[in-house]
Length: 389
Image (cartoon, rainbow, N blue to C red; front, top):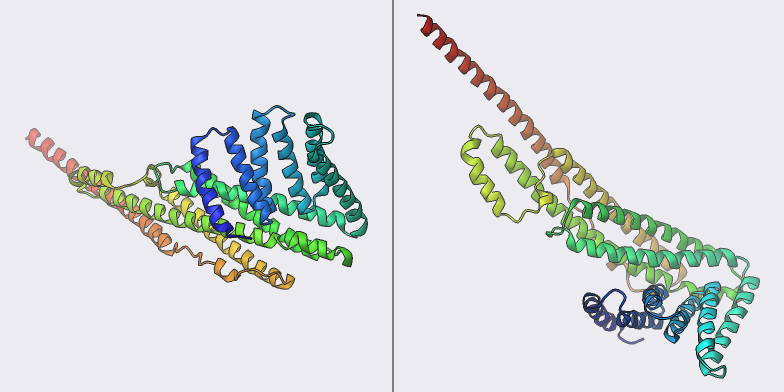
């Protein structure tokens, strides 16, 4: 298979450079996406291959005429991926699109046309035999297609989450960004659960003995793809939760100091100095929140993140059991199950203390104002009596 880990590392670094240097519709970017798709095809990760082939194809559709040979080759690449995954109807659809373009641009005797016709005939045969010989072909195909689609969606979501996580705790951090992160993280977790359920149903779908080998070929790679995506998702979850906790700790610290300074009877002496000290700290605008209700809402969001991480850990354990039952050889899954506990007990205690401090400060203010009014009243009364005399 070769050292594909180094290949992917190279492609990942090169892709970042190209995406920054080139426009989103540049033909060179399409060619690079296509190259990555070919690598994923070679190692059998067809959902990832399809993802990059489709990215390439979208660019080519925008920059090339509809009968360009490169567009035909792109259709053929997508057709081959669908053929590998057993989605023969899609394979046939894209194969015929590819053939139609080549028939307009190449002579009838060209080897490429002959190869495409043979591929389409093979796909037709597969559709006939697969549908007639599998007792549960429709259910199996539906589940397999749903899994492939879900894995592509999850992979795209995780890529977006990783980008959002990088911005947490930086000057780009903001309330809308965090809301998007929490929403996308929760949606991806739900999609993960649905994918897990579909995977279990897929393995429980019965087929004839003749088609058992075909089923095994199609399904053996799915748990590996699912596991790799789960791993990336949980890393993004864990880093995001840790950054949220650190940001929340800073927000609490600033909030508590502001309340204790401003509510002090000596506030006039200290407020200017304290404000200067706060300004010198690397505090983000989102962390300069003194409202206890807002802090508690962020605390609840952190709790939800922690719960989601625990649930994903459970998915890992269930997946390990499923892989063992199917006899699929894979690296130790235990190394993927990481400690995800985010300690928020201290945060809860801090919030309670903060609320108590606020209540105490308000009481002190009321007492001070009352005493001051009494003193003023006494002084006025003394002055009035003195003037009358």
